Length: 459
Image (cartoon, rainbow, N blue to C red; front, side, top):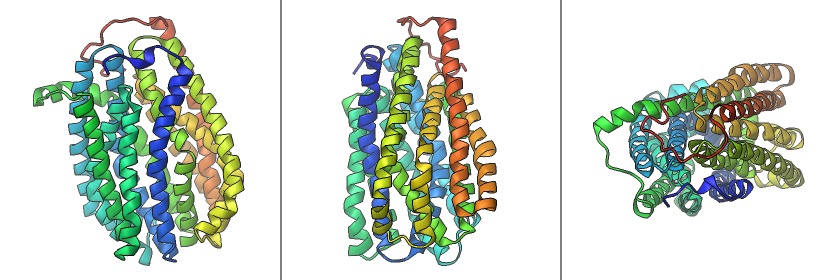
């Protein structure tokens, strides 16, 4: 695949096609996490469910750097592809894979050393802490495999092959789903079995994604220390702010979890259950932000900002319609969700509260995801960092703090939704303005000028 496939044809079709392919993979991946939660809930201990919530939040911190590098991979490879520079795209691919493996290994090693202290900081106590430690000690050393698999899959998407990126995710999810009941129940490993199954799945994702970029597309290029040093500026210009951007989300999530923990394991369990249901229900919204990145990147690389603006508007339309449809579905399934996860007391109340009142606010999270993906692919990554930290520091933390103080556990959920609403709306207005300015400065007509070797170094 040697041409920029997103620089021509229907924008809406590209958005829908890329999103649909990514959604299938994400649904499979998130459903396995949900199945993990379901199997553990069958063991009859809310502490197990809460422990996965604590472990998952900590893992979210560790993968923030990996996500930043994944975003850098997509932005740089897609822009190079849009400028017809497959050689440069391949070089970026090789060097970012190396960066992601090294960075994830170092960060996970530090986290492993201070694991108990980190989980205590998040609010884990007693038997819940013991379970969280057992889960995290198995899954955290595997962070580098996760990081490299994510980056390789995103490189595949960046050159327009969403299908094989989806296959990698589907393959990993299938392995996880098969191993979960075997390890959790068949071998009686409980929460440790869930962690081992997840590790096996990550190896499969890495192998399938590597097959796509190495064997199918022959994308990675030979590299050297000199080339790695030479590309560091270009990579860090996108990936650095993206890492900071993604660190804001787990900071906010950890504050939310710590605030929820003061109301007991039942409240944490309810939040954890919704934390697994939400990604499945809104997989298309998560996929949308990843799907438009290559489309925006290729058209920005070709200096066609009219198509960039059309991509943003198509993404907004898809986001709003999808969230409204999901809200109706979740409302109809509320009783079944409570029953399936054996939720009771505080856990049941929080699940119903979220479904009845807060689901619609997720469209603003989707808008923020789309805006951040656009900033990263338009060499405006600092704006993504600004808005994500703004949402966390000026939106999530104060709103959650006041919500918890005034309304208890439901106020925690409502405060988080309010922060996303405020900053999602503002971010989308700013990204449209940035596209307008770029279009006026460089013109909206596509050009075939090659991308120089410093692409990504400019901001």
